[in-house]
Picture 1 (cartoon, rainbow, N blue to C red):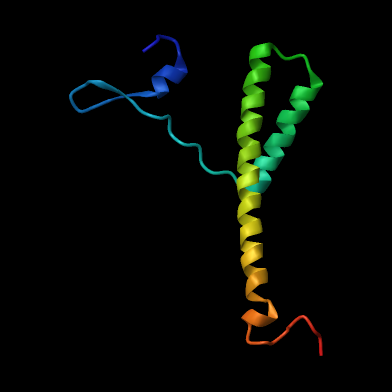
Picture 2: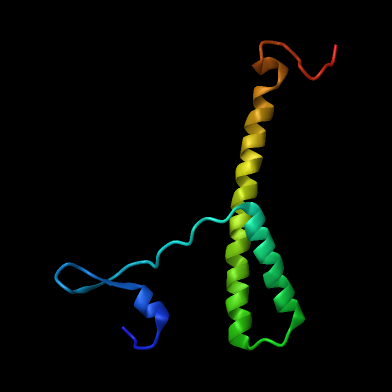
Length: 103
């Protein structure tokens, strides 16, 4: 383990006998779509404003990629639910009752 490296500290744990084992850092609580989108918007604004070091820019870019993946997962889930709902409401799947006609 590297001293002074917080990432190395987080990625190590000890077993009952005191031996160190590699483990993944604890997962961040899942953000809602709106939370992820709002944070992503802030990341983009900070990157566009400039004045950051290369290290800061790369860290923000990586965070932005994570947030974009989170948003995409939410959108994919919504698309899948919508597809199922639309499929269930087609005339051949609801006994021929076309509820899209008002009368």
